[in-house]
Structures are given as structure tokens and as C-alpha cells.
Picture (cartoon, rainbow, N blue to C red):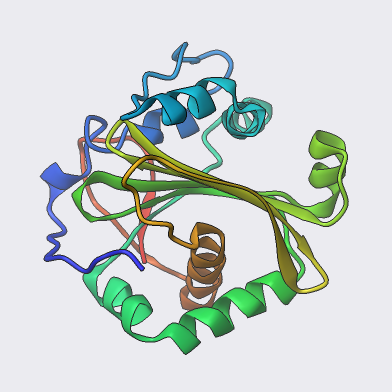
Length: 213
């Protein structure tokens, strides 16, 4: 589980410099920013980031969805200290939420979870139709990429079948702890659904809509 650290909801925390995923998940074909300027800390991570079709498809899928809608349709969440503490301390609570998500009727959704100190979990979850059309696979596709500012940390992808998860790919950069990102994102998304409507994060430094989770 991610370490719990002191966290302040202040405007200067959410900037494009600290959370660049906001720019790349809100772009359309018309506002495309070009090559993704993320960095890596080792050769293995550089090879994975440069050659992973799944990682490239994640960004392309979100850009295509925004383009079709002619606006940013990603959903962004800012993790509050209360929610972070709850998820860290109660493993059964996390497990029950992820199980509920995996057993639900899953629709296509994508966005990012913004963590303290510039951590970003970019996620894509596909409904069955999109999973078949984009991946030519059955079930529901899910993937998560973890970044710290513009540093690539790790990536996971899998398929949701019959209320369970089958992991396809798991990569972590050198020195990074292996975190069950797919289960965490599933639990956080289910928690967000149950808590709706969520409070908005207010800032004039960014254009994206961010919900406090």
C-alpha cells in the first residue's frame, strides 16, 4: 500500500508541472501535445516505456475518446488524507470494494488518481464492447500506469472475467515497490461511485475538473 504522509489540499499542489498526466489525458487530436515527455530511471524502464504497445494504446484511447466527444471526458480524483488513511488501514474494506467493482456491470471510464507529492495513477477501464473493438479480447480490459511527476514508475494491465481479475502485464521500475494497482484502482473507483456526488477541488491554475475522493 502507498505510504501515508502529511497532505495539504492547497492550490499550489495541483499544477501541470507536478501532475503532467492532466495535460496528456485531457488532450484531443486537435490539441495534441506531441511526444510524451516522461522520463525513466533505468534502462529496463526506458525499454518498456518506449516499446510497450499497451502503454501507447492507453494514451491513444483516451485521446480518441476526448476527440470524439470534442472535450475532456476523463475523470480526475484527488485523494484526501482521510480516504488514504482508510484504504491503508482496512485491507478487508479495500478487498470488498474491488470485488464489488469486478462483479459490477463495467462501463468504459478513464482518468487519473492524483496522490500526495506528485504521484499519479493513470487508468483506463473498458466496457466489453470497447475491449473487443480495441483489444480484440473478451471480458473487460483494465490498465494502470504510475508516475511521479514526469517519471514513469510502473504499469499493469489485465482482464476482468466473471467477477475476477486476470493479470496480463506487470512492470515496475528499478527500486519501485510492487503495488497491486489494478485492485487499488478498482476499489477507488467503486468507492467514488458510492460517495457521489463528490466535492470539487477549486483552483484557477488548471482547467480540468477534479473531484476530491
